Length: 229
Image (cartoon, rainbow, N blue to C red; front, side, top):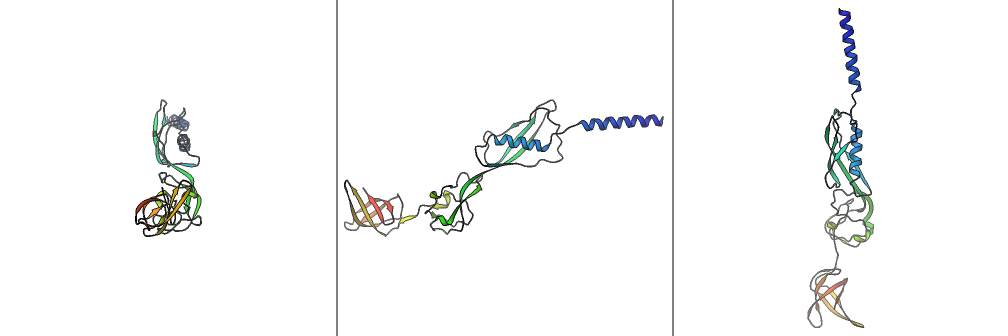
C-alpha cells in the first residue's frame, strides 16, 4: 500500500513539474523593445534616445502568442511619456510603462562665464551636441544668431544659450553726440545731433538737431550714426 502511494505521489509530482515547466512568460526585454519601437515611430527628430523605466523583475506575464499592442498619447514629445502595452488574446493582460525621450541638437554653448552687459564673441562660444528636451525650443544653433549680442544677465560656462540670455547691444546711449544722416534722392545730408535716448540697431529713437534744436526721430544704423528720412 505504501509502495503504491509513493508511486502515485511521484507521478503527481512529475505531472505538476511538467505542467509548470511548460508555462512561458513574456520577457521584460521584449516589452522594453516593443515600447522603444512604438515611441520611435512618433518622434520627429533625427538624433534621439529612448529609455524605458524598468519594470518589477518579479512581474510574470503569460507569453503573448500574438503581436503586442500599444496605446500612446496623441502627441509624443521629448521628456517622459506613458505607453500602455496589451496582449489581446484569451489570456488578456495589460501593463503601463514609462519611457524617457531625449532629443539632441548641435547648439551654442558658452565656453567661459559671461558677465551681464558683456558682448558675446566667437571666443566665448562653441557648438556642442546637447540634450534639448527641457529647453522648450529656446536654443540657438547658429553662431551668427548670438555673435556680438549683449548678455542680459550673468551666464555661467557650459550653459546652452537661448534668446532669454541676450539682448541687442546699445549702439547709441542717451546724451551721445551723433551724426544725423538724411537721405535725399541723389545726395545725403549729414548733421550733428544728440541722442535723447538709448538705442539698439534698427531701433527708432528721438534725436536733437544741434543746429536747429529741433527734436526728430531716426533709425539707429551703427554706433554714432542715425538715419532720418
